[in-house]
Length: 404
Image 1: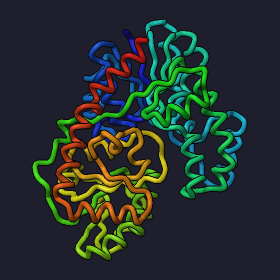
Image 2 (image 1 turned 90 degrees about the vertical axis):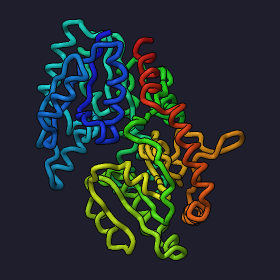
Image 3 (image 1 turned 90 degrees about the horizontal axis):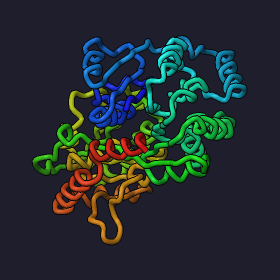
Image 4 (image 1 turned 135 degrees about the horizontal axis):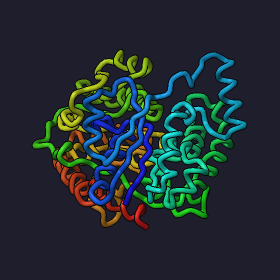
């Protein structure tokens, strides 16, 4: 089958994480049986070598420049973007990655009738699926990494919204937008049962499939030994709002309790593009903000405990899967463990669950003191990943969605 794959996020190298790692690994799985034409955009840090390397994984690669100038500043600019959102129904974040040149190429190519299926890798690509495109491609799949409406509603409810006043105004617009764009597609794909329920409520007329994330087991090997100590680690992109909230909560509230009991405890916040708010956390004694590092797995292998105190953000979390794959004992919130069965009757304990500050302090202390429990979580977490969360397994599920 000939598949047109749309991804305004350049999905290489897969070590970039997030959207990139999911897109690349699903592409890698699909190419075994299908001819993939990938249309993407190039950001400033994408090299010619990376473009060439990505091209080796697809039948055809088309790379367009990342649009510039879509986010004019000032109150006038913000007012104009909101007015367009109100009238057009498309959020400014989607319009910021819209390229008329890319649109023209897509419409010209689908007009030839050569594509049997189309995928949007992240909902931000839906803008390119115009009536002309829909009329030419019979099977159209949107890979929704997480609901924008659901996430906004959750951030308002939990008090973690960056701009709650603005988000309350936007909420009904986002619900309208998500309901409308999903109607362009024959099939919707999400990563967890919770997201599936959300999207089914918005579009009961569309099939909603679960395709989990996975882990490259070679990139994230099981750690050879328990390092002991009192070292906490959080890994994630440090310009992502849910991550910023999580590391602030971890550093300023959870870690202070842990340090009171274990003065020698340390906390590493590992991830690229730390914002000024994240960089300021390094002023707390014992906290290190690393920025981008050559190897995330090295930090996972050295961690006594990986803490994932997510309070917002739907969808399965790569950071949780990768920590479990590496054999790091995990303490995480319900959000951090979404889509995973890690505890409960007849389930081997694979991670410790916490949602309140005192729960985190108790779980971390328990793991600091109990080497046998750390060992059990390490091996049982890794076994779960090997069984249920490989990219080959996720790719097989995605293939079934596309082939019907």
